[in-house]
Image 1 (cartoon, rainbow, N blue to C red):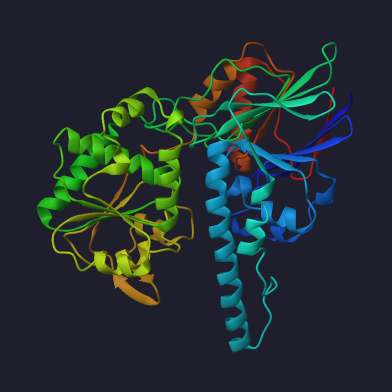
Image 2: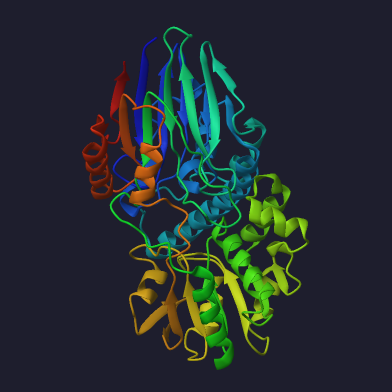
Length: 468
């Protein structure tokens, strides 16, 4: 049976994961992600490389927008198959797609008004890429499955999901093609997590496959994750509390916000920080936190023990879950020190901007960054030492203490990626290095060749391969 593999995204770039597998008359799309790099956004407006109606099924590795964000457009343009993923991924993806649809609608309206005012047309049409209703249209297509439970996709084609340890419900997906005498397996890594992270189980070890697609987000660097995250976080909180300011934490809604709550809970249980008010000010993060509680069966041993002993970090007595804008506005009128966790993680939108306005010019307050800050974002300007920043149309001096912690990474670095690959039960026929900028992908590919002698390829966007 001939197998064809095509790379429709995340090839020599980090976002827009989409891989088409064709075998035995079936066409299976693994991930359907949105491009988030400014230079590649036009790809999302272009027609899909094949008509969506021809695709038989979609497999999702996890819920992040760069792996799921184009599903509504795929469905709007004709896809009618099933979307297979873990139960947790299905729940989280629905929240993320609804929010993305809302943002698309708001962006389109903003562009329309601006272009009307300026008397010109923009590069992209003044319509949403998709709407909230388009997002809802994807929901009936989801077919949740459990880890290690094979799902039949066609004649002599099945898929199995394994825990990737990246975010709740994330998976490595192995697709097995052919009968017993001529079987071939293709493993899609998705994003691979790091060992010993809070809440989640470690990534599955001892995999095997004939062909492997492995991510390389951090394929060119080693991240020092040996730092004591809890101790560093305690120092920031205690120093700010003594100064009398607030701790503002720009955070992503999925995994990062929940990790922060985990460490705050740990520090309070050990009496290493005061029991300050903690505000989770993000409707999406609140919804996803509720999904975490629903899927407690996916927790690691330590988190399970906390929950069984009634010490869940998601039920802190001093935790306030903020949904409405009115509730959010009251936070900055509270006297004394508070911990404010708000989106977005790079400060390029969301309620965190209002908390920055209230705190960034206060010497007593701390702005604590716990995630990567991309070039061109407000968060990057702040961590790079800008003396003044523009927020919500006004200029503010940066007088607050700025701290960046790097111990919260949910991506395996170069060493952990290599460890994951070399733990395979047998050598694959070929490895494709994906989901990384060109330099990172090529650097990791060279490392794998050097250490293993395997056949390693860094594919290009829209490149296809026939697998023997």
